[in-house]
Length: 171
Image (cartoon, rainbow, N blue to C red; front, side, top):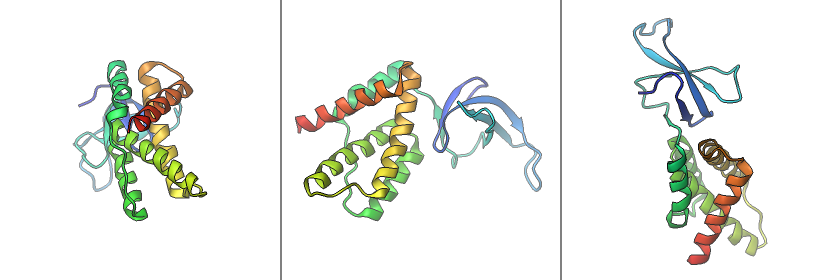
C-alpha cells in the first residue's frame, strides 16, 4: 500500500506522485472502492485513478538510490531478451514494459544492442518495432534511475550503455 506523497512508477506514465486516496462515485461502480490519485511528474494537468486493490494496473514504489546503483552494477550479468520471432519478441517487449521491472527493461536494451550490432553487420537498419520499444524502455529505465540517483538522464544513459558494452565484451 502506498501513502500520499510517495513516488511510484506506472507502466504507462512513468514516475508519478501519489497525491491522494479517494473514493470515486462512479455510475454502477462500488462506492466503497478506494483509488490512488496519482499525477505524473512534469504533467500536473494529468490525473490518474488507480484502484488500490487492482493487479491489472501495475504500479510500484520508485527505486531508492542504493537500489538504482545495484541495478546498474548488475547489468553485465543480466540476460538479454533474445527472441528471433518478431511477433513473439514484440509481445515480450510489451510484457517487460508493463511489468515495470528495471531488470526486464535492461533485457530489452541489451537485446537491442545485440540486434543493432547484428543488423548493422548485415547492412540493415533496426525495425520500427525494435526502435519504438527501445525508446520506451530507455525512457522508463533512465527516468527512474535518474530520479533515484538525482542525476541527469544523459549521464544515466552513458552509465548504462557503458555497462551493456562491458557485458558484451566479456562474452
